[in-house]
Length: 148
Ligand code: RB5
Image 1: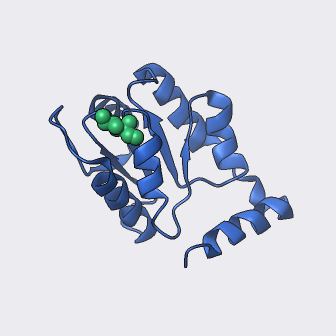
Image 2 (image 1 turned 90 degrees about the vertical axis):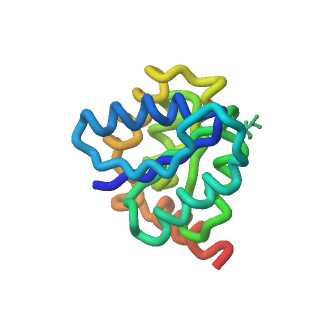
């Protein structure tokens, strides 16, 4: 499975830590940058990662900026992207169970690498409840219609 990742300068260290964890677990990671602390603009990176997921070049995506807010907003501008900004294990699980989030966002200035990695693993392992509970399938289908 290919997982696309992108970050701005506020999130690139967290992005790299998650990337290295996923690579060690056998996932293929498409790293769309950035790769230094030099200031860049998060909209470009979040949107590029969202496009990679929506176009099918990656199955899933993970984005990081300082807070996680701006880059999640950028990713969610791409139709078909369901990017969840999470900061707890429970939210990471719910993002899959209820929303079938195809992207996660993190704030590199707010979430420790080991915590983010645990959230990513939980998100990857959880099942979407839409396969057995119609209301979740209906709501995600409605999300997918928005912005088309
Ligand atoms: C960059 O300083 C910061 O604004 C950005 O990483 C992010 O937190 C925006 O939402």
